[in-house]
Length: 393
Ligand code: SF4
Image (cartoon, rainbow, N blue to C red; front, side, top):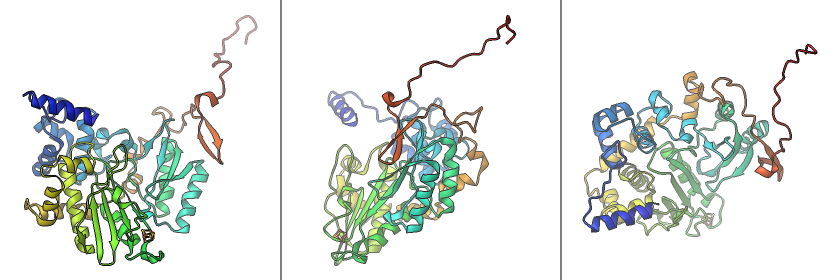
């Protein structure tokens, strides 16, 4: 769809017809302009934003965009006051909605490193709640089949075991994939696991125009597939090579060639690259198409990040430092606030009643949602008892 829109817009522009870049009918600005409006105007709520700079009541395009921008700028928890009503369905319950109406739960496992005790804790939660478990491509464990009213109980167990939100539901940093690097591997030339963990802990919770994935490989053999990530790092015996703009998904791309750098410079460059992307990319635009859309392309972004060509590097650094300093685990904060927990119910008039329509079958030792032809056939519908006056029953 984005390619079709680009083609149509290009043709319209060539035909001399003005093409609107407005976010939606409620805001006559691009996402990047809206970000600056919120940041510079120190706006902290959607109501304030639409009253001052928009019209109407908002829609399913501008409301999640505003929620993301407010979150990127540290304007409160995603379920705080009116923020809750702005979120997409996944952010709204901080879990991933599945095809049968249940949710999946993904605790953060920084760098893919987990202790045996952590694995046991996750496994015990899965066993106790009958959740289907699967290792994800981002080196963590996805627990499927949680009912909405079970989410707080499950997260209480996970938080008590030392886990935190993995933000699998958000347009934000997902994972930093890594290999074992020089700690264990005979070929490793740098400690890729430690760097991956440090990067994941630094950027966790950073809301962005789309999901962000990073990767760190301990040598040129590239076992962490870092060049297919938004930011990829590959160790050399002299330092780290940094790649940006790699994507999987519908349009796989390899990130372009990098500068070689030391660890402090790498972290600073990553800070600036991500914050510049967060501020200026379009809605639902990943880093690869963003790099293509920036005037001057990757060379211009490289100049901003490495040479401060726009004079905004200090501002980008300060913004990332503010994000790192203000981070809190969204699920731990939710568990501590009864007003946020009240929305986790299948039925508002029967909060403790599970959805009776869920049906599962066993497959390879775990349960999965039953397909239509696997559901029990309903032979007789619900019966309504009728009083029989003649026999008095
Ligand atoms: S990328 Fe290199 S260091 Fe990492 S696991 Fe593969 S061979 Fe070993």
